[in-house]
Image 1 (tube, protein in one colour):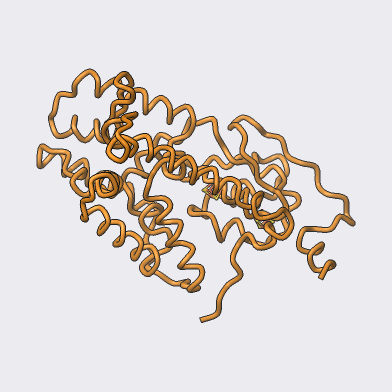
Image 2 (spheres, protein in one colour):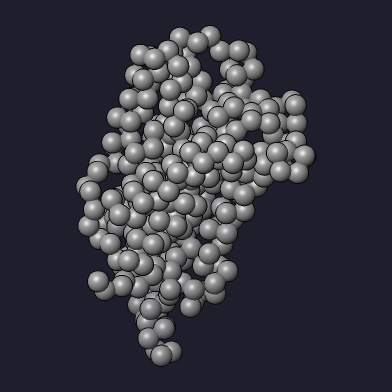
Length: 305
Ligand code: SF4
Ligand code: SF4
């Protein structure tokens, strides 16, 4: 097996390690912050949020409910309490405003594990895998709703790795850790970005509410792209990039509008030409093409060597 160059090497050489990882670091800090909101109670006796990401009460005043959990409950025939309705409305409103799949990259505790699996997969240079379609997760979403209807319970929550991981970390239940290991092995050996990119019904649900969010990534500097392909190599949903980046018409929108984009910011981090940036969905600015004799990041490195 040959080992492919890790994406982001040129960006690190050009910009320094911190700048070439700034959004990754910001996401890890945010994920840890969300976890500590729940963990500070069981671990240190400082109760900020009681519950899990499925349903919680923050500082005894702010109810938050996963809208997908509420939806499963409705399909199962349960009449929701008013607090659950308010909590789901708050969460749904926030993700409609920001962008649904921000949940996947900035909040979900599974993300660091699947990111690690993707890194291991790149290191082992595993190219082939099971060719699952990204739309498979929509079938999974339908399946968990059918399961709720048939069983009259929120059946998926018994095995939902997000909930079981939280319970495992907070209360030491081993099933959560076993689920995590299965997801890791599935992503490394079965299919690239297998769980988050193809299977997870929670990601599918938040993708469906990713149509109005303001936070978007723009390929504003696409004229500087030198086709190094690092953004494609790192992106967990690589099909979302091309319509904004590889467009023949300079007037086409530079905004990545595909509902599968998780706003992880890794394309921004690893691009040595600083093609991408975070912006809002209405920002249509495109940088002017570089002057003909301008050197790209790669040619600067080659010259320096
Ligand atoms: S946008 Fe172009 S230069 Fe930047 S990482 Fe992607 S392929 Fe490389
Ligand atoms: S396009 Fe960029 S921000 Fe969106 S999922 Fe891919 S790497 Fe993350």
